[in-house]
Image (cartoon, rainbow, N blue to C red; front, side):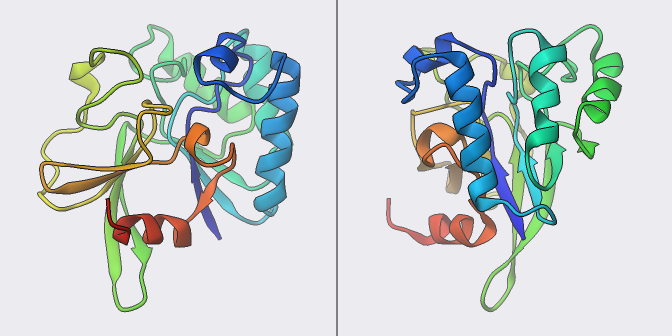
Length: 198
């Protein structure tokens, strides 16, 4: 089974207040996120993490990936040191693999979801084309471009700004933990979000 998530921010104390997360300490948050992940994901599953997995001291927080069920595929976000935004991203890419990720992919990837009657192609990346968790869009040069009209995008980065929205005739689905009970969501849930009225 395949799952999707983003923006765990393991090791990031301030995210508790910024996003009104239900924990008092970063240690409680880390353990709560690990527990909720492992409640739904089985060891043989696959989880796509669309960025911002961990903050704090990366050598302590990123290896928490080893405690999480499933094969973990990372599309880096701005807070992941394996993202090309960071000077030592190639070195960190190897470290993220050593610390528990199976694959680190480039910033934009296209894949299929098996719907009832057809395969639905979706794009996955950390950033939506437009939108941010702050008052103005950052990382403009990192935003996806050139995606055909109508093809949905799964993303993170916006935290609590929306779960599902539409921009320029395409559906955007935020797979971040802050809008999904701090758990990954399944392909089936993504398919539901592609069709619900907004």
